[in-house]
Length: 252
Image 1 (cartoon, helix red, strand yellow):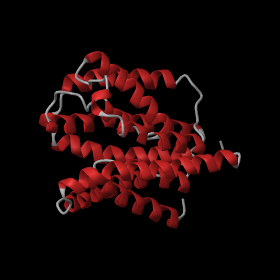
Image 2 (cartoon, helix red, strand yellow):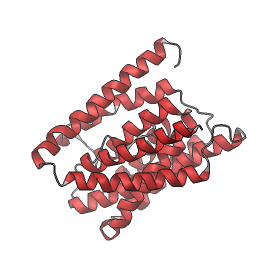
Image 3 (cartoon, one colour):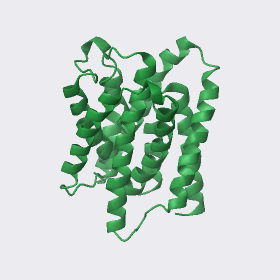
Image 4 (spheres, rainbow, N blue to C red):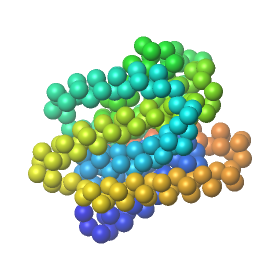
């Protein structure tokens, strides 16, 4: 990677982590979009995984005592099964497919809570959540909205939801690093990000999350709830347009 590309990646990590810290969503999708326009798909997945792993790992550590470990354990079993199954498939998503998947994700945030039949507190639902969200993470790089769909109807208190979701998200990010990192190594490391860049990305994500947390203190509850879904939807619409453009150009 050129110095200019590295600078763009790190700036994007800080900025999008701040957005996630401010609105609780959208930053991960926006970061993946920037990475997809900057580096190859496999490298984008690994860098995104490193950034989000640092962010969600730190959040999980901060709220460690509120994590519902039975949910995490069953979810993890589903995630491991999804990784095992996908390891037998020669799968490399195109940029058009990734943009298409990310463009469709906003549909999930508009589903009314009462319509969701899922509850991660139920073992069977947690297992399905682990499989489906990990598969989505390996396809589009982003799975937060789907994970949230399994938590919105849970009877868990808010702190448990926040802590447990952060722990659950770790599986998808680790899966991306392992899955696409192995693919890069199998290709003799072509396009692979150096270890120091992964560490820099992780630190940038933590810095961005801290900035977002400070900004959140200046946003009213009304504006927070009003704008978060619309921002995510606009980003999704942009990704859909990008996917269409790539497919029409023969990049699908």
